[in-house]
Amino acid sequence: MKIIKTNLLAAAVAIACLGLSACTDQTEQAQLAHESPELSAQDAKDFLNKVERDIEKLSKPAAHAAWAYATNINYDNAQVDAYFNEQYSVLVAKYAIEAAKFNDLELDSDTRRQLELLKASLEIAPPADPKKAERLAEIGAEMSGMYGAGKYCRNENECFSLVDMSNEMATGSDPQVMLEFWNAWREVSVPMKGMFAEQVSIANEGAQELGYANTSELWRAKYDMPADDFPKEVDRLWGQVEPFYEALHCHVRAELSDHYGEDVVPLDKPIPAHLLGNMWAQSWGNIYDIVKPKQKMNVPDVTAALNAQGYDEIAMVKQAENFFSSLGFAPLPDTFYERSMFQKPEGREAQCHASAWNLDDKDDLRIKMCIQKTGEEFNVIHHELGHNYYQRAYKDQPMLYRGSANSGFHEAIGDTIALSITPTYLKQVGLIDEIPDESNDIGMLLKVALDKIAFVPFGLMVDQWRWKVLAGEASPEEYNRLWWELREQYQGVGAPIERNANAFDPGAKYHVPANVSYTRYFLAHILQFQFHKALCDIAGSEEALHRCSIVGSKEAGTALNNMLEMGKSRPWQEAMEVLTGAPNMDASAIADYFAPLKVWLDEQNADRQCGW
Image 1 (cartoon, one colour):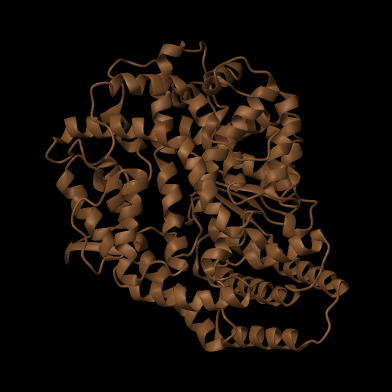
Image 2: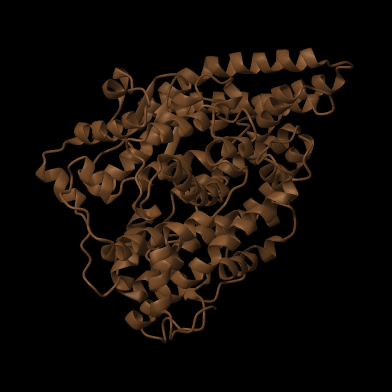
């Protein structure tokens, strides 16, 4: 789910320098900075104060322009939003580059931390050369435009958008049609390959001017540990999840082979990527009906309960707010209900994708959703409010500290809250009358695993690929080969047809041409279970971890808020320790949460050939 905040670090500065005049201004400032003979610690503090004043002055109108466009899509709002987005991005880029002039100065830890966060806020750093910076912006805009305009036409009269093709991948039953669409979408990214390689070269120059070896190091340096240690850390976390993933993979492959035939899904090879219910084979929930347990499961029908009890959109949100109130959090402000968008407006277009906003970095909290009265949307509302409460918790921090402790924390918090929407919680709020016994848990756990655990290796390998490419470890001719090597290594998923030498399949995933880091999603899928276990322990729950809900626990609420209000003022390890009692990320809670499912999977896989 998207999180919108007005602070600097929440802004994705994909195009950091828009237009020659802006880049030239940055170049002149950087040259003046390097020519300055003497800089002091006070200069650094004064610089940070100026950054905060200037960014905050622009961020509020930029946020309101973004909200106006998202909730009322028209030409005029688009122009205003684009203008403020450009101004904001250029300002952020200017100050991030200027911060490098303090690299060699001895500073107190707080000042140094804010400067490093400012520099690391850039995903792609424009070099000082204005022509190269302008070209970098052009490439980013061109690739984003190519992705957004991508479509596949069988003939002049029959064309398909990404949404159309994705729907067929999710619901279709003809493997040939799914293969057709899978391959067609990857034709869209072929022309990006040369531009992407050029972008890597120019961006690495910009990263070096900020003091990093390359853009790979810039990305890996965002996690309060040496950049070279971070890939080892994520591989360590993956090692904790891998045995369970392999059991899930084995079961899914066997069931798909039964469904489509062993000639389509061989039992000794990676799973063909077009058969997993998703254009990128990143989550597998859409194939649940193919791989589900044979026995009938008594699963609570939250959708039916919401409708039977007359819940409307506001009542669903109020119930979610009550969850947080039961933990001891203060009520949401009245303006939240006055200004949020809970339904698609009549007579105008709006973005229905769920997102959480804080327009003034203080109390102007909102969510934007086109709420459907379903159990799934009930979960999503709890998730989005998790973002809002996090945003409010760190609102009194300095601007550069208003954000999640590391890039995975924000999404993890939203998902942690959603994990507490258990049958125990549903019974407590009157949406179900009886809690199903534990024999019914396998179906629910399998659904969760197909969405969350199937995603983990994909969430890991996207940036594993980019780190290598951005560090110059793979030439453009090797881009696609490396992509599929990593997909097979981590996911056990393979290309369903031989890939052309000119293919650029990574570009078929939005986050690659848009230069949006993907590691945050991997971390969120690990952290949500670690946070859930810690909160359940604090709440004194005696239920199995997958049945625990922290609803009503003031102790859990206090512990959670103590971590949230830190923002990113301290290394994430310290924030982690505040909540969990230990400073390390730990994926072992995943094994605890899915323990009954692992037993069931091992039984199903007893006579199967696993691995790839």
